[in-house]
View 1 (cartoon, rainbow, N blue to C red):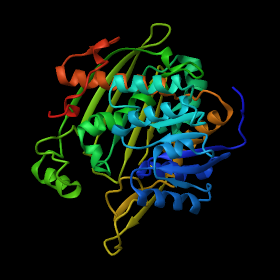
View 2 (spheres, rainbow, N blue to C red):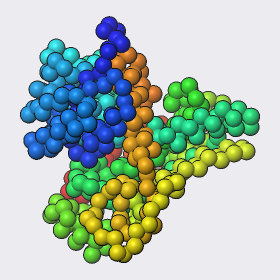
View 3 (cartoon, one colour):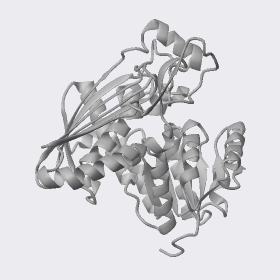
Length: 414
């Protein structure tokens, strides 16, 4: 590669919603980067995003009225694709067309989780990126969460080296439901909570079980078993609440997606050792806010993390009144009582180190530790879990039947 390292990486955002702003706020702690462009479908969202870039002093961000305009800009080296799931493959096709035709000078693309809605879509995302000779990164923030980075380093250096590798990873993520209507629509999102959140859980667990400096594919998936359920949001009162909040397109009386999912993944390492992942996710959790729980167990040790077990807590009595918000913790469910406070959500959740890593890899022309290959592997696991939940059977890998499989809740007319 020529032209590396670049003095600064100039990036454009494709998408300007909730997760885009989370990424943007984390960029404050990232060196050698400027945010120079944004494209999304709504002009008012683009303008709000550009204004936030200026406020955070992250660069001079131009609002583009078309994707092609963004890709053809001479001040953009890489793009962050953070638009809704159902738009990503078409976006990647446009990126491929512009780069291969010589109309775009992009060198890299990063894509928010999950990489795609199906295995075939994910495989095409990877093919397009590599055919266009783009460096590519899969934005799985929990792999870069500060407790994950520190915990994995200590466990593998001190405990695993003395008593043997870890063999069981547990990951759980729960909150009270997504922000935007498309998340609740199975065909647009690709599923329900399993697609939306278990992509985090299986990948952070796979990462914790992988030896430092070993490739992620050093662990082979042997089988998966999944269960899904509708616990809360199909109850009439809550289904009506969703309809009132998001409109007729979110109809959980007739077209629900699962709000609970459980998955077990059996793996094997290079020496034939059996490893296990246990993952649960839910949109039916009502607590202080988003809760992430992680465990890593080995022969003589254990690692545990709970995102709501914060060092800082505040208490507010009934006399304290004010507007609703999310100023204490993401997906906050209350403004009164005893509340945990995450002092640095972007850091604890992993966005800061994730973006720092991607920027430096793209700037230097190096391969990130999370690429579209990992995004594809995650989608294969998710589709195996969906198929298992549909059939009631364990799905054994390799599983070619997953290539064109679509979860029940994502099938049009289902």
